[in-house]
Image (cartoon, rainbow, N blue to C red; front, side, top):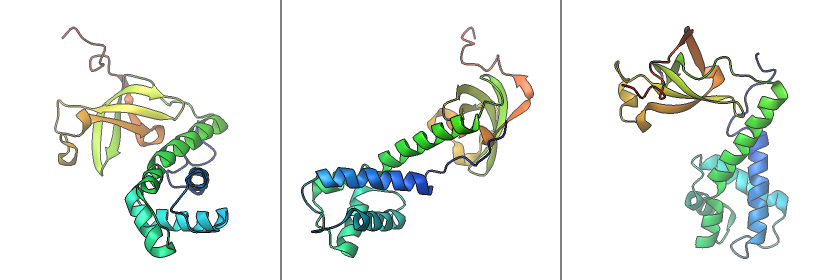
Length: 186
């Protein structure tokens, strides 16, 4: 079943708003480094600008931007609080995806041990679905190691990847029982 709406992106507007609200709540509990008499709206605007300018969401980079552009006075504690930005993005994105799955009644198009194909870093890959995460509509896939592995992928995390359902295609519905991790006889 195809979803009615697209999968939420990591930096989509609803996710960004939720992250900025969490950061403001956290920063309001913190005692120093914030500009005097700064409203939540002003904090949101300044945090959004810093996040836009520093895609990696590193606490030090965010604090440096806020210091140079908005005269914040960050210390090590404020940098640590801002360093939570990446964690907040991940958590809020997963929450948004789980809600999207329920709202759109997304179901796995195939199951564990299915032979599959996908594109990773612009390279076609073949392998097997090791796990199905229905709550986030993702497969954990493993690249075949018996054939050539695209050079960009050599040595990467033992060839395991979490990929959205919509990026993985079953190879003619064939099962991969012989490739399954449960085949320990060999």
